[in-house]
Length: 537
Ligand SMILES: Nc1ccnc(=O)[nH]1
Image 1 (cartoon, protein in one colour):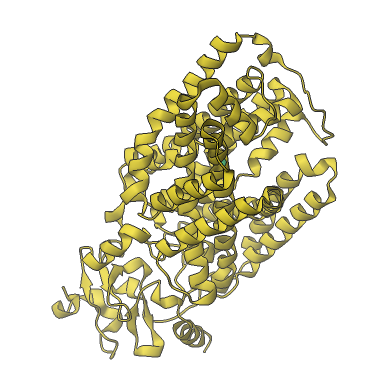
Image 2 (cartoon, helix red, strand yellow; image 1 turned 180 degrees about the vertical axis):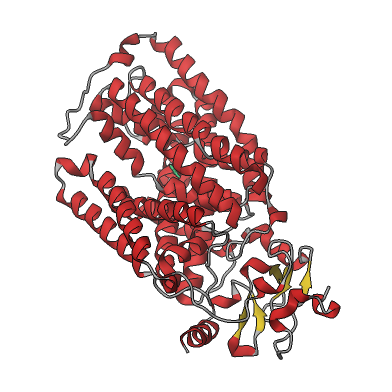
């Protein structure tokens, strides 16, 4: 439908000019739907028609709930600070993660943006690429840990060389993550959720029957004294701040939630209910098991070996369920963010499928090379970068709500290269965090991430007060958003790839006679250069 035909004032911005008319439609382009089945609009805004019901969203996202990680981290922490302090730390973590993810998931659903696209509003066009690289590496390194745990469990049951199991686990991870969230993730995770839930209860009951119940686990004192500058619960809370990366995972999933479900999704699917189970229930099970099972070592590998020894094949099935679930999410986030990073940084536009293989090959190589401690160190430092991303994003989201602004500017032709306020807050706060962690003092394990986060909030709040409009947006004429009646419902055909995307993400290309261009094609160098030139003259 060409609205220009009606002479309607909707197209007023092009009236009387020789700007080409838009090819507008109000339904999805079949070619776009086919592409989305693999890519989930990873370089585009997710239209309202590609959203999942809240139950499907919950099943897809339940992937992150099931990871031996949550069980083992709490178990290890409780040996350092004692059960009571550990539980206090877990509760604090549930409240903070739940609250933040409420906010983050709402913003993701209302904007339909990825972490990569949204970050442009915070840090500018180039600055945003850092977030996608950090998140892609987080997904890949987590895939290494969770995959290796599964390989260890399989080896404990069946024997054979560990390298063989690494290969099997990697092949499974790749095949499940090839389809997008709606193709595989939601279905696989729905199927595995009951196995995970039953397995968790069975592990507790089985170990109690086998080794007897001893209530001493509830009052256990610290066993591995560690110097720390602060209370034990803060030590535990800080460990969970190290996985604030979950909030970026949340963003990339919640963009596929329906707008009318934002409250349910915010409170339950991604928020408090989710973390009650993920952090507190999983954690309490871990603390119980570590005081009940005779373990060789408290690590993910040690715990799964204990479980497989106790329960045999049933234990292995449980571990397969947990680790397969979490690795669908890790592979998905890793591949989607590598795709976004390489598209921005190197103009390399490949399907997400290709990046699924890259995540698989890289994580397999790391497992084979046996460099787990390197990855641990990497994640510890990188945790500061993602924690401060969260602080800056929250300040920005809250400020935007107060200013009553509806849409974030993220389009390549309409954001500056760097947002000096966001970038300064990001570099300074994460720099301080990295310095504190490198100092290896007792402050590192308790305060480093807290200080990073608080600094990121303060600095970004101050920078917003001092900010100028041009930090956030390039001002250019001929915005297709102004030419349609409904930016979410009207699809505009891109003159470069000839596919139609929702008007929210569309721009006009000054280097090609103001033809319409989509958010993905707009990452090309010539368009960006022309847009920047137009804005500054
Ligand atoms: N997001 C994640 C949290 C914990 N473990 C993972 O592998 N991934």
